[in-house]
Image 1 (cartoon, one colour):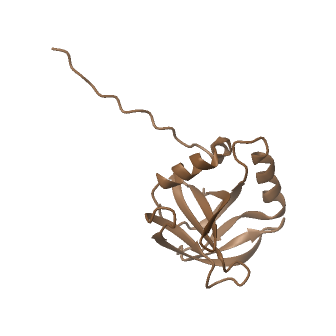
Image 2 (cartoon, one colour):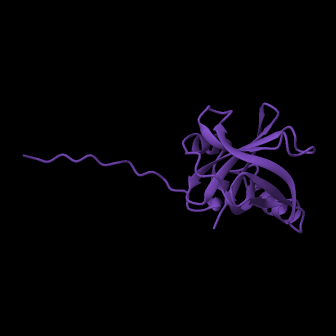
Image 3 (cartoon, helix red, strand yellow):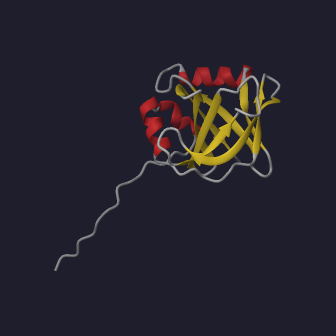
Length: 157
């Protein structure tokens, strides 16, 4: 008698944010859709802008954004809020409320970064993040009800 075994297909693992630069927007959206919400983050999330991914410009734009505009997000110890780290100096500004809620993409749980009640400047912005690998969150950006073609990653130590 021959024993039959079923092999589980290998699932690609995202090891670092560098892997995200080579993915298309559609692939990033699918990665987000397949991920769990993860825990509410705490501490420093080192930010990487994901703009024009899967092009030669992606890493250049991410580096430019990191140097001059946005360095990441500093989450409160209880995970209930955050402040963005902006400017070349990493100034803590633009506060958001943080909570688990349904995603506008698929109604499944995600971590919502809600600026509507905490920031005059960013009031129409809503970010949604999901943990795609241990300590690595992928984020989607909404302006009002519209999803923008800009994404971001947050890496936690």
